[in-house]
Amino acid sequence: MLVIGAGPAGSAAAVALARQGADVVLADRHAFPRDKACGDALIPDALDVLRRLGLQGPVLAESRRFQALDIYAPGGCGVRLHGPSACLPREALDETLRRAALAAGARFLGRHRLESALEEEGRVTGAAFRDLESGTRVPVSARVTLLATGAAAGPLRAFGACTRVEPSAMAGRVYLQVDAALAEELDALCISFDRAICPGYGWIFPGPRGVLNVGVGFFKDGPPPSLTNLQHLLRRFVERFAPAARVWARGRLLGPMKGAPLRTGLRGARLQRPGLLVTGEAAGLTYAFSGEGIGKAMEGALLAADLAWEALGGDAPALAALGPRYERVLRERFGALFHAHDLAQRRLARPSLADLLAARARPGSYGHRQLEAMFNQAPLEGRLFSPWGLLRALVG
Image (tube, rainbow, N blue to C red):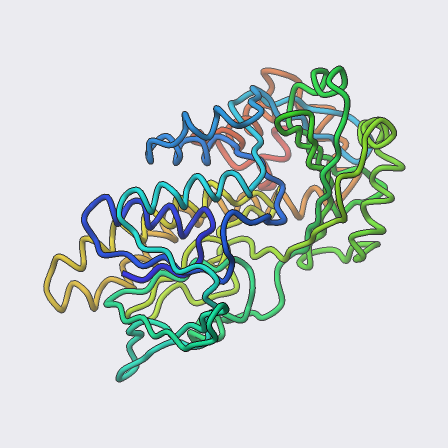
């Protein structure tokens, strides 16, 4: 098995495959540990996958832990949703997952840049890399290749799997060091759809040791954003959104903003070809509503790993059926959820509607229960952002 990309999706797949006895090569263009632009939030779905991998304890030991998420509507009304979550910089999270893959028996090719797919009679049979240390070409053959390279279009194009070059969204973050007293006061993850940046969004995610992840994003789907320069969007966010202004005034910037593209809503890529499975953010396994994708990236990767291992133990027809089966199961499992988040993103781009929903989302109300269910990945009672769901939420 060849897994390309050692982020959460790729490393999670490598852990699962290697533990089952597969011969796994995990390749990435970076040396590790390495920084990665991300919000760093681990919401309930991510924590659940880490538990399944036996890694929740080690990750939480390094993280800042919470039991709530605060969402702010454009007018400033806040809604608190309860559920377990955490924040840990991706540099630490990804290294924990990668080391777990190596401990399970996977081999790591760091500083190996993907150059091309290897193909034979229309079937992907691995990939060719360029060793960035020696400059040599390194071909790696595999019966099944998992592509988990994130939102970048280049790797998808190399495998003939890109259906949309442009990303769904753009986001950027900075790290801010604050004093211990302020850090202690911040008792929840925070996402804001403040009117000053709507239909963009911003966040304040308190990490360990008093370091905050503060960022902004905007979506390319839906109403056009008023600002598409992430630096300008961040400046407006920390000037106009009171909680952001407060931490910004008392914090010390630890470095420049880092930005990254997003692929959301299970769109933008072919999910499979013969010999190839596309997973993680490369497959669009990121929420449009919040830009969060670590949990679903790992879930999709574990599904790909389980189905691939099963197919590799079968006959030729089982291996031929792997791709279509993976795509069908992935869409059945996540399609409705991503549709709900797409609807949420479009509805919340309308400030007046978002404000009205927030005002009606009192604890115990239908709207509050639905939002909390989305956050906790619990079965939804209905579709909050459907016409019927909106009507029920607005009437209380």
